[in-house]
Structures are given as C-alpha cells and as structure tokens.
Image 1: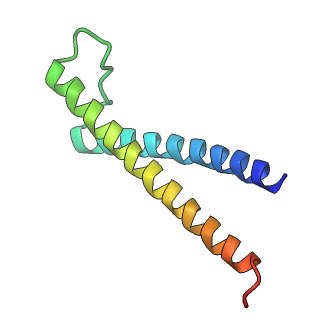
Image 2 (image 1 turned 45 degrees about the vertical axis):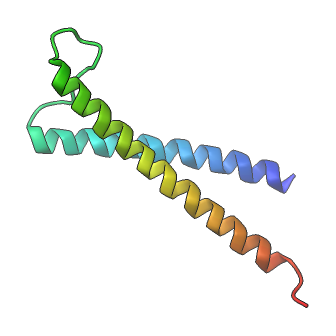
Length: 87
C-alpha cells in the first residue's frame, strides 16, 4: 500500500512541479522579450519564433522533470536503505 501512495504522491508532485515550471518559463519569456509567449498553432506567428518557444519550453520543462524525478529516486533509495536492517 505504501508503494501505491508513494507513486500517487510522486505523480501529483510531478504535475505540480511541471505546472510551476511552465508558469516560470512564460514569465521568463515575457521578461526577456517583453511579449507573451507565442502560440505555436497561430499561423501569424513566425516559424522561427514558434520554434524557439517550442525548444525553450520543452527543454525547460524536461530539465525540471529530470531533476525532480532524480531527486525523488535518490530520496527513495536513501529511505529504503534506512529501513533495511544493517548487519
């Protein structure tokens, strides 16, 4: 049962971290460019600008997820080692 709770908690935290990363990326884009992030589906948006936003947001969210999941795995390893008896 603990494994299920841990997996659900990890999924919820991951979703929250991803949402916050997207929010931070949008704010950073606006700070850097002075404009809202482009809508890649809008045909009026130049392909170059849509591609830059696509790459920046994908890389940013991907890195946040990578470090989040690595941190959770490290925490899980430390916790499981602490629970096992030491001989």
